[in-house]
Length: 378
Image (cartoon, rainbow, N blue to C red):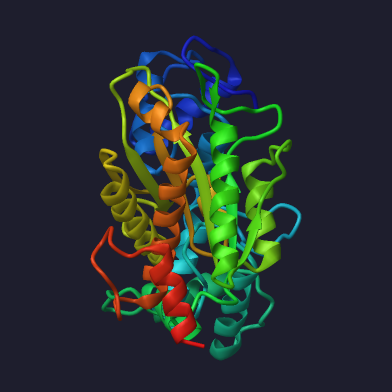
């Protein structure tokens, strides 16, 4: 499907209008309308904001896929694991939540029917006396409806993710981290006054890699200096590597030169479903960088971007400064400042695994402290 924006028209636009009307975001006057006008753009922005997408009012692949997925409810179609073309949608999300409520580990509810969801579904079908074929058809939907708990609450995914972190222990040695410098190759990212986002991210990734390896961590960089994988390829790299954490490094831009600061992003739908460890790590990184750099605090936010949604391990994207802001740009151009940023991110990862034990106030934990802590645990 082509990218759609205000001013476009045709059958693709008519479909988008219909999907938005189904969501109650666009008035349906009953007349055929294939124009992408201001009302459609406003409805698209509203939908993107609700779903944690980039709020640009443009219907690209991610927005269209999410719009299509929002039109499905559990039982409206059979669901199964397809390796070549994974099934996704609100019906998959509902299935994952139902299985989780019933005590089955369907993983983080993300609306993608993957292997973990299939395994949980087979276990449920086996326990309920159904054919354990991993296909969610009419009989399975009825069983899920009959057994849905009367009382809901708690955060079982939170408990599972936190327990995994606790069991891995406070030491960094042996933990596998994928560092993802944004853009690269023919894609420089934001470029202002000769400063390129891709170059800043690459240099910062190498500085972070060196510090992580010094602690005994296994640090992997998702791309080479002259390559720019897609978000799906970067996520696949982390998944294939069996990463414990995924850190994506970027800098931001804005039409206003006054925009400045640092923000972090983790997977979350905005309706309470989130990567809980990712959320914790995003908070630690945000606080450390604000305390160490004096950057304006633009807070941590849940998003459903592919780089966060497709990565099976907890993933965080960090937007470090605005290259369109002269002060942020000058600071990021300084190698010594990038050392400060790298130390802050490393300390945030250490805090995650400490789980509040033997910790120190934000902004005071140093790289030397991390190394000393690792040595005392040997």
